[in-house]
Length: 552
Image 1 (cartoon, rainbow, N blue to C red):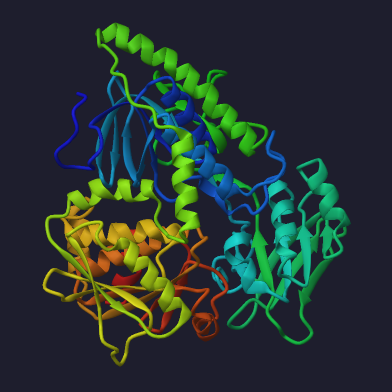
Image 2 (cartoon, rainbow, N blue to C red):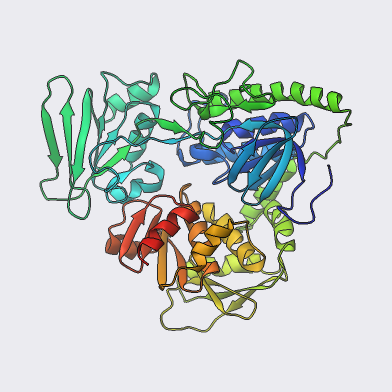
């Protein structure tokens, strides 16, 4: 039960606890469980740290006067790792929560455990106004950090009256010439200094009792229509010069409970029901963070939930070991000081990869069954210099991944990293720029899918991919700071690797502004299909397949 797998996901085949979700709640739970000497695995589909990683300023976390979401959760991750917690980037497809031994089925294999902590969070809710979805990516957005820069010098409207709306409105003043907050109620639903900051900001105007009826425009968003709920007056706002505007929606959240809402108790809104110990209706299964019923959804309450859930689970796990007569296995603890020193050393060297990152790549590369060649196309640009530096660090990590510098060729967008099979035949997957930030994992998973049997994929889905007949070239435009981008990047790459008719090329919007202008991109991720169809928002393999199949 404690041995390592020879195949599969390359981790332990059995854990004391599996945490589904790598946000503050999950990370807090991992810290407490790992410190108590339990073997714990955190499974996160997108980015370790969760949605808080896109928050530019965190000023209300006790003991930390000012930081940002990414830095705060990265310290949490290191702390959990120092106590021995393990991490897996993967999508949970199914959870089996009955009995003492529970199963977590992921796209990288099945993991068994005794205890489960559900910390899946919540996703932004649509406001529901007319043509909201049609203008997504054309002026309607849901992430100020990802998309705020697209609206530099523009007028922006923020829909919502909670903490997120207030905080993101302040962030948007960095770019917009004016921000108008449209609040459905008579006052903000959050309190404290954030409201004072909003009301006193010279670039922010607030309209209470205001509902958005519709938005519109030609190719991009050019007007917004609102209604005063008290007077019933309808107003239409648009720029005199016909310039585009932005509408950012922060209208609450929907709990991510679709995986388990039929297995444990949830309320009418779909939020997870837990007791004071954070235990769900199922023994050995706990909940924490924004997925749960709670009055306040903040980092501080999320980490509190995670701590309570973990300490409650400790008692449960102790009873399970006594019941089954199993002797617990001790595990090593890594010094957090050592992890921090590694990070500092890599930063001082101006590198992309830390020693711990290189160590984490070893078991992945060890599962390659064939060689992958990466053709490197460089020119004299500064971006090519960055790509060259990234390649130098990747070289030598595995004899299964070979980087070769190519001669200048016509028709190539420079710089480019092109994935090829062991014979040097290009697989239709290219990265234009350094695959850093949130896209580093996308790059590694693309290598893995090209150099091995790849991530598990349902037979019917694989057949659908291989049955695509027409030639398709996808441009996937992303921001390296966007947490929603990796899913569509990995989906497009997987389809391309499995079907020679499909190409998927990733572009970092920071370095290719001409794409923004040509395709009127005002949000990421963005997928451009054959220079014709443009679609926005995160998508998995099946959703992307549906779009491609419609054109067959």
